[in-house]
Amino acid sequence: MRVLECRLVVDDLDAFVADLGAIGERHGVTVQAFDARYVADRSHLERAVELADRSIERGENVARDRAVEILLYAAGRRQIDRALEMGVDEGKNRAVILIDAEPSDGADGEGSRENREAAALEAVVALEGVVSRETTLERPDAETLCAFFDVTEAERAATDASLSALVRERVALLEVEK
Image 1 (tube, rainbow, N blue to C red):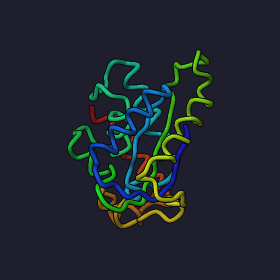
Image 2 (image 1 turned 60 degrees about the vertical axis):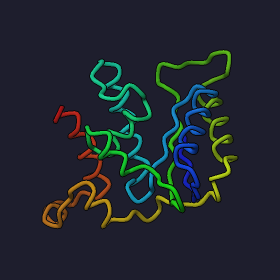
Image 3 (image 1 turned 45 degrees about the horizontal axis):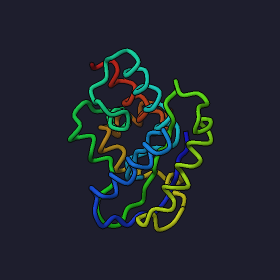
Image 4 (image 1 turned 90 degrees about the vertical axis):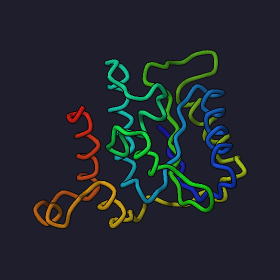
């Protein structure tokens, strides 16, 4: 899995999402863009990918598209409309773009998983909407994360777990709530 932390300026959201999809298809990877305010850290996305892949493998997925299934798990929600809040919007965005080859993919005519992910990353960086590469996960937006994932002050006070761990717990709970 590759993660691009960046600043975006998106003029046409549908065109930007289509470009990400085309890059994914061209390189045999899944590409999903997130508003960085809703991502606790890299582990949050890794857990979402793991659980989405397991759901797809078992035939229990809600979405037909792997990128959308990953988004659902990252958001800890089964409703696509609610999960889309976690995506990027038109205008300026601090973003995290996930690039991941499916786990069953091995080396093929287009190269190894790592090579395809690297090539897709280069293509994403070259998109007009990607203004700069910059750290977006270094300082998580605790207020936004707590509100989005329904993490209360009482819950945070009752545990020594990090906010990231609590968010990953919400992601994992989606599996239980099915």
